[in-house]
Length: 367
Ligand SMILES: [Zn+2]
Image (cartoon, rainbow, N blue to C red; front, top):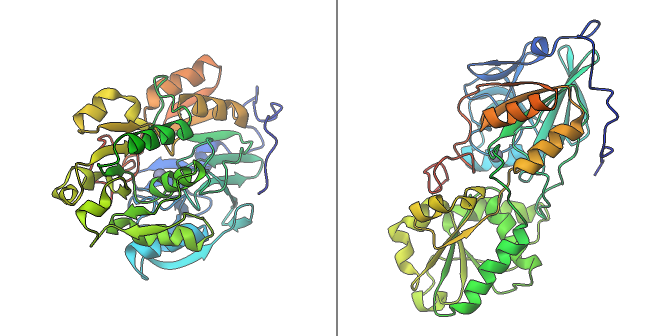
């Protein structure tokens, strides 16, 4: 994987206004359908059907069906096909990380976002101005996808799902140890782990394997297709079994992954005295865990935490930061105290599938 240098020398921090270059807002601007690139004739992650869409990743709030032409990584295209069927777009084009494509008057380049398999930041360049739309991202290690790549730019468009200093996710491996300690402590009970079907579930499984857990892991039926897809792309997940049809007594001492909404459902009656866990960055907030009836909160997130967001903004060297979907205000304020131009984008329609969900047990996940 190509990696950028970890630190930018300040080339992109400008003291003078844009003179011989495009103004950023002439390259990308927020409109009702999403982020619009007029000189390129496309939208990024549009929330309404558009003629040409460029998609950062497969979560349903970013990757919607019904667009004309669609540009995304092969993994994102495949996952959209799995979810929506073959006719999810008028036409598709796959782009690899690092590949450059000219679209209208701009050049597009995709870089790994470290969020889920196939997730990308999209760099849009026009003349000498480069804007990077991060989509959702994290800079924490994840064995199931390519690591986040730092992309130097003039304007960085960052998500802000966990854009408050209270959100510090810590080490995911420690949370997995907590889960395994609970499994060891309650061998007569089943452990049900709520996790979003695309990305989080596979990451939790991979982390369990990395921690040395080699027993079969059980899956809710809604997770099967996407999990098998991960395996087909070379992500090793060990022995997986569908929970359907397994006798209740045989589920004692086992771990099952399920969509968050299923863990509060009658579906749980098939498990012996289940311990309900939930893997999410929101689990840092104890009240949310209690509210959702979560016995074992696991702070595992596929989004950057406060330190990740601020360190990334800093390292891009961007002189201007646009903040979107999440807790915009605190991050905008932080940027301004650092002397950066910053503003919220006020895009709507994001945060309905993965952790952007405001409720820990929201209906956004596929049940
Ligand atoms: Zn996402």
